[in-house]
Amino acid sequence: MSWFRVVGIMPAAWWLAAFVLGMATGALFRRTLPAMAVTLAVCASAFFGLLRAPAFYATPERVVQATVMDEPEPDDSLHVTSYWIDGSGAKYTAQDRELALAGPCGTDETTKKYAKCSFSHGYRQVAEFHPADRFWQFQWTEAGILLIPALSLGGLAVRRTLRPRI
Image (cartoon, rainbow, N blue to C red; front, side):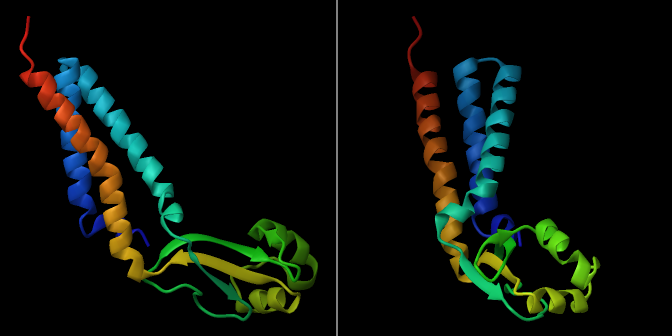
């Protein structure tokens, strides 16, 4: 779930980083519109970059599902990826598996009968996720990623603002 990013210290870290970045770009460019455009572009790229980053903070846990169950990963975990493997361990997308099993199992993937048929043909579903106990580790890691450059830029902006003009 995405609640890893919307609670805890992350909203405050994002707000502070965006504010300091806006202040720094305003002090460096001394023009409102270019400073706003750069701030928006950097915040958007940081946001989309950090969406993929939690997969690199820690090795995700892996659950191999060999029988029909509701959800292989806990409700309060951060989903990383899911895929299918065959008996030899080769990865399959859901589409590849559907094509391979269209004859014996049909095409209605939403039924438990289809899942049982998939498992009986040697396919296994793999889910990778980060458990909820990594919440604070991820919060402090992302806060550091956001705030260390922001505070450096803030220091640069203060220095530029306080520099005597000639």
